Image (cartoon, rainbow, N blue to C red):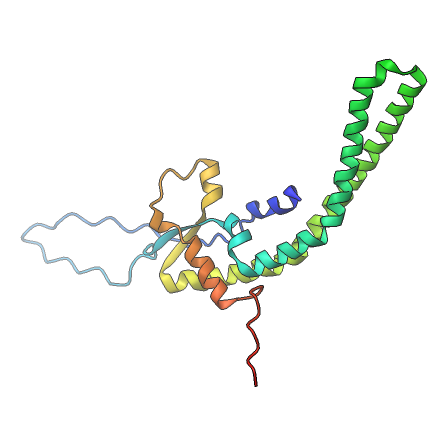
Length: 211
């Protein structure tokens, strides 16, 4: 399941950017004999605002709705994972048997072990490919709608707080383009807390009140 959930670390749909115009440099002071310059109109250049960092890898555990869905998906695939694991063990045990006992048996027996190992490796590869394809499909079906909700919620979250750009902190750090960021710029925990308040899916149901 490692690759199944690794897909989450490359989700970049949550990046919110804002186009900013470069402000015009101020003109030099006019001579004392010239008429006073007219003040620039108020309203800003469009570049005002905050830049924030968001670590989307934390959503797997931090967003209640997503965590509940992925935990269910993990349980759904547990029998298949065990099937793959069992066949992997058979292949590895057979390889070890050939290496450690191959010289103690006849050529015919050794060749039989090799053929058996080759056949099991083919079965294992097909099983892994089928498992991965189905896992990717189910992951998209389960997490896609939630990430769409997260993206829309992020837009409102940023608008309310004057945030004009969100950088995926993990991706930026791994790419080596994030040289410094003050801790206050990381809104991951606050964003997840606000999202969970608005979307409490997956939380334990409240006990029913007695009539």
